[in-house]
Length: 549
Image 1: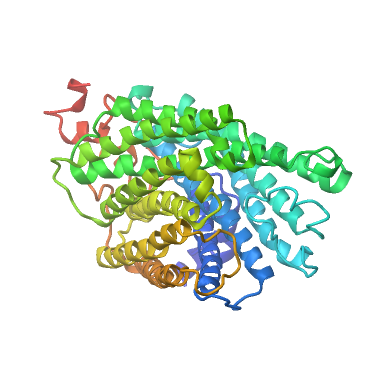
Image 2 (image 1 turned 90 degrees about the vertical axis):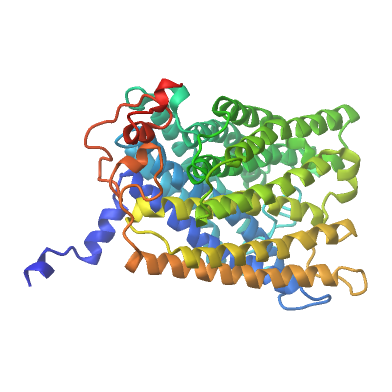
């Protein structure tokens, strides 16, 4: 009876989580909300794949297909990728720099709730909006919302307005988190942690925070201009009243292409922490990895118009953006070679986090090669708006990002919960997802090469698209099975997973020096750092890294 009286009620626990300003709890809530929306967006993708599995299929109507396409793209970019990555940054950056919390804890909580509110606003459109086809519905203008499709004449009701407002609100949250990450990194590093001794994870998230501040602003401006067009007759994007539909594309892709790097650089950060630990080697070429990360962030701001080779830009414009797109491959290639050099000659442990990172290396290499192909303007003219682009894009963001996110979850789950995920279930998850992912998206390269356009509801038989689409749709079954294994692993391990201890992987960064899960203020006494691997120095006082740095 006494024990029951001391146990907090469910409402008290819920209240503690809702009002928290602890960066670790907010980080976990970011990740949990991203995973919930990942299941939603995955279900929407499955509906589209069922529809395209057969020619002349009528599993869903064209209207529903357009809504699924819009919601899937918007959700995956803004409400799955961004929250999960910002969640990891929230949880790990203060721990890795030896701080007790983020620089502005209340701003941190505000940013999370704004991001979640933006996501809810998008899906509330099912209840509160009237769409292009007249019924209460979700947005149906695509995740890029090209003008003039978003004009009142073609997008009646308020579904597009919900899309606009949801991105505006979540963008405010992202900017708040970026300011917090920059202030935490610059002002709260523990004694001895110079910029040259920061973990690569912190460096990459620092670059991402700078990019968020730069690229969210054009999107916000475009959303405000679109709202003025729709409600006050401003005509920024109305070609019949002197506006420009191409202006929307410029605004959107000034945000949209760097956003790909905002999403993929944290994936690089995960790989840069996991690969050395499971190779039992120091990361190869730390200064080059930092320089390459900063270079990618800088160059990526000048490549947006390679999405617009077919809109009729000048030859000089096409040439500039083709060259800049090729150049961004150079620092990216440096990072890939440095990861391979780290693995080379290492005592590799093929635990689940390392398996996902190796899968990432192979698939991101494929994505990079097709990206270079699409940077060649004449090649892009042939395949722009085909399924080849869809395949390339998903190899970047699923093969590059989602694989590293899964690796990161397996790697840091013990730190956050005090329990380890099951390795056998993890391997089932990995192999099913590798097979399912490649079976889904590799065939779409061939469908695009023979002329299958993207964003189509159905296709006629006899055009050669059937086999590739049936293979792609079959791959979804494997991916769904992999996710079931993953979810079962998480639930099972939370209840009865093996205790992890403070440092289950024998790692080297500061977060592993605390208990699992960490105490409320992270460190009883602030650590003092003398090298890039402070835990190695503690474990090996006879051979510390600081002697050689």
